[in-house]
Image 1 (cartoon, rainbow, N blue to C red):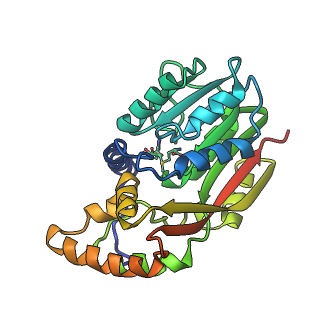
Image 2: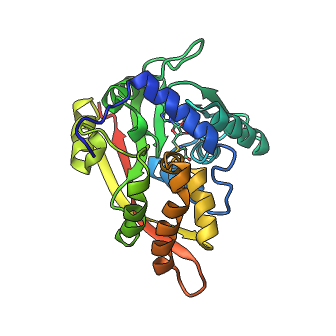
Length: 286
Ligand SMILES: C[S@@+](CC[C@H](N)C(=O)[O-])C[C@H]1O[C@@H](n2cnc3c(N)ncnc32)[C@H](O)[C@@H]1O
């Protein structure tokens, strides 16, 4: 990419993200592919939530982390989910109702600042801040980490999931599409702490977390076939790339990608991606 590529200002970036996830919201995790729900359950396990704990779920989306977190902390605990996208929050609220959870709520708010009226969290009032596949979208993750550190009490944890190495077998698929579009919600700024485990650990330690650990685990996602893969892509932030492909080049772009997908298909037509997901837990140690 050209070095002159303009980085959007934070407010513009957040507004665009909110609209992007609003467009994903109707089909997010509804294409028959279990992806974020599985990652959400696993993040909650890594966070080691206990009964009665008070939890903030930043970038809660449709509730993939929020729902298992609310179950883990039980009726004496509480979970507040916040997300920029009203469409995602509407789905999270529906999930809270469907699951009969009296200890959870979802709000439209900027989780990066975690500062909202009238009842934003007070310093030292939380046991855990959870961020499932969300914190690398923030323009200022260091400032967010500093804020979360202040919100956490003794024994508090910040637990987040983010991407590690991506399945090299799929690189030709993304290379085939690259010439046709421009936008990508996943492009990290040059100073992002999410460029390496070491950078993230340094940032979290500098912001006052006493112990930081990351484990890398497989994230295996299976698609029944090419059609389901397309449906899944359009249900995620990955749709941003495809929205940027000019209509007159769309057929050509699809054909280029499907030629590569055909090389990845198993004899039954299914597709599997094996990526690495990282679970980082940063603890307050007094
Ligand atoms: C990939 S989704 C993950 C959602 C959910 N945690 C999950 O595991 O399925 C990322 C979410 O982060 C939200 N997000 C990104 N930046 C945000 C911010 N500054 N404040 C609140 N939400 C944000 C997006 O709107 C989106 O719903």
